Length: 472
Image 1 (cartoon, one colour):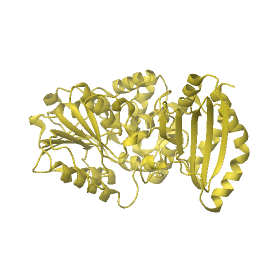
Image 2: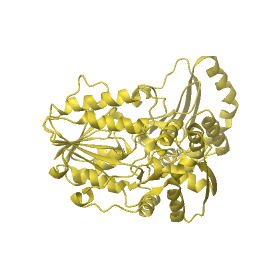
Image 3: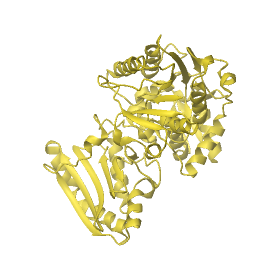
Image 4: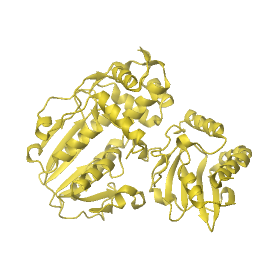
């Protein structure tokens, strides 16, 4: 079949595309930025990419011969009063484009809705579902709650809480019931529905076999990891305090923490249906989903992460618009060293950050990350998706990868930390010489003061970094 995918660089779609390619389908992927095509997709046969911003589709034309399309655009970390309107606009524009093709079926992944007091994100997902309905094609909707898998937001947040806090005083929403589902089961439902007549023009709640409170999920996660944990829930923590609690304890952004707390107050229990039998899916238990997620982590084969999303609020345009590092009106720290072993240096560059650290004075980096967290930034806890591989769009502690090209021998990072200006960090090898360049474009007086405040630390932090990269 000819299948069109939206949200290509997102957590679900990135995995779904690879699975569908293995089954021999022809895939058309919609991406906002052609510079963010994942490496593991770009090299595959049977796949093409088209540039689409679903907020601006005047000049976009989809291939006519589409059989099935997946709508996988979600923005949990989005903020602003117009958030729901923007989601509606994206859905309407997608629908208008699909109705001009031969598409027979659109498959949408939404959220379980069984409470009168839905969060704004669940309300928005339900509204998107209604918008996507059409007389030109059949809509199949799957509604899921908590998705458990390596790199998923819920998995990584629970992991942070369990592994960092032997004893925790937690908000009362930990007693809210939910029905988690493994990521591999979500993918099996999505894949199995393509072209399936029995599921067209219908919606189904999909879930794992257990109804658990968030507290039970924390305890079971600890059991899988061999960790004994003690949890006391307090009724006095307001939603805002709960959001701050989640933000400081975990690697999530404050916007996402706020959205999650808003959603976690609502019970998410699936309505019964025959979908498991129709598609032949026997969902995994929560513990088994956690075990399988850690197998992926231990094998260093996490394909996608919620952190891949550009949700820091720094980027209001395409990632590639920041690749040209400015020269004028900027402060710079430029260093160079002769490279003795090019392979060694490139491998060191591509392994920087995360658990590998920044090759010297890591305490200072951790302090900077903590201060960033205090002022509402992303901090250092995001780490990196893969220990030795980087590609455009990847998070890297409080940086975002703009360019990672081993052929050009160039890695370019853009700061997502809270700053009175913009900052870039570049590593590039030219004629056996490594050039390390930190560029800061200040905003106003505070930006200039900030540069001179941190300037004394650059002498040993950046010097130590480049020495480590060349092995001296």
